[in-house]
Image (cartoon, rainbow, N blue to C red; front, side, top):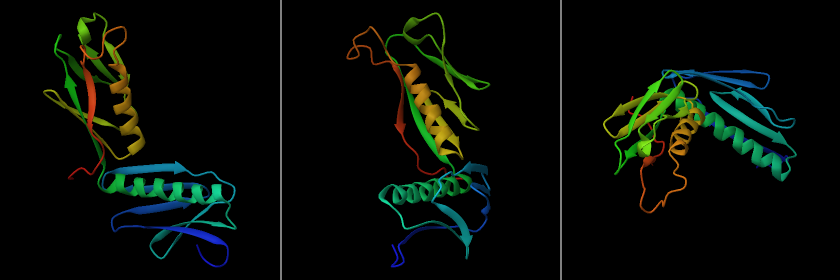
Length: 183
C-alpha cells in the first residue's frame, strides 16, 4: 500500500501472452487458448501499464482490498491457464463391480457403479479435455474453474448413499490437484 491511500496489485504479462482490457472485461490469449472474464466492482480499476496489469483501488476499505487481491489472482490464473494450462488427476476405485467411465459430448458417463443399471452422469464444463487411461483420468484445460468444477462433478456423481462408506469405497476420486501441464 502506498502513502496516497491507494492499493495496487501488479500482474506481469509474460511474452507470448496478449491481454486486452475493455471496460470491465479482461481478455487473455496465449498458446493454450483464449479466456475472457468480466470483473465488476464499482471501486476497483484494471489497467495495463509497462507490460503489467494493474488492479487498483483508491481509498480502499477492507473489502475493497480483498476484491483487488481476488481480481489479481483471477488474472494470474487466466495467464497461467493460457500459457501452461491446468491438470486434475482422478482415479477410478472399485472393489465390487468394475466401473466403466467415458466422456460423450458434454457429459461424463459412469456405468456399472455398484452394479446399478442406469448410468450416472456428470457435466463437463467449458473446454475441459478428458483423457482416460485404465483407472487414471486426466482433466486438462486453460480455465481452472471449468476444470475443477468438472472434477468436482465427477467425484460428486459417485457419492455413495445408503451403504456403509467404510465397506463400499468405490468411486472416482481426485488424487492430484492443479499444477502445470508440461506442454
